[in-house]
Length: 422
Ligand SMILES: [Zn+2]
Image 1 (cartoon, helix red, strand yellow):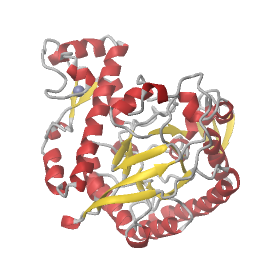
Image 2: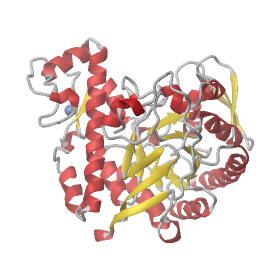
Image 3: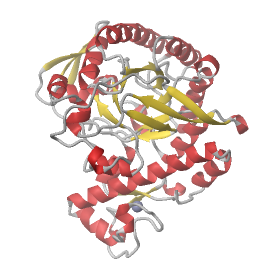
């Protein structure tokens, strides 16, 4: 934790020029028992190190909603994720660049990853089962008059959901936006295939993603700061040969790291299988490339993902649940959550979570009080639940990481799955 004096303030001068790390990813320990591919490592960026396995909270619109950057740090997080699609529409990538880049604009001096905008722009065209697995609500993400006009080889033409203006998101534009934001980790622009498409469609779409990968890398090499690292995205749907081929191709390209995206199937077993195909193909010569799993973050998925060798995860789950009155609790049979909207908590003197060291619980707030705050839509309720949920996920990840280092991942994974308080 940096001293208060080291934190950026709104009138601090811009940071000195960032530098590309000498070593992007260092593996510090492995857990290979029971066929696990788990590893603990350190992912280095121009704005600092990320301990892995690790979770990345969403700062979609340049803020982890309701939370100060220092609070995110204090909860144990090294990195946040900004959203290319949303930030390019409002307030605009060039506007943020003129304000000194996204780090300075939002007052977060640690590592930032931006996604490519591919998922959001393609979501306007199709609701997918992946949305459900990933906890996204169909049709509610982009209200208003947003829609796709055309998906072409050049890119995607669409209307902004904010003002209806005509927009284009292409490989070059996505990388241009991410370069303007000045984030540490950029993600290439891909075609995000829906779940319910056949192998033929998936194969053609995956090939386009690979042509776009090459365009992204070429643009990035010519225009982005050299310290900005790049994630390629593995598509290929639920087809093993396509996934393995895509993984090989992406990992062998000039990317610094690999993200697994697209449709991961219609249920968790299928998702685990698909992720396993990719991480198996990422061993050997590719093992030094960090692996990110896009949009996944349920507690059991985090445990399984770590076992499979995923290094980082991002997901709206902890923060969005918090804003909707749901708290994470160590109860696997209830999907690790309790709904504080329910009237049954009206007279409950229990804390959110017995034994939880987070500031919200340590203060002694009761479920009755939280239920009241949620019911009356008081800001404090959203804030406390967001803080508690982020603390919960952070501790799960810290325990998993430490257990890999200590050689006891199997026991730790079983304990978390069994409902231990993290
Ligand atoms: Zn708590």
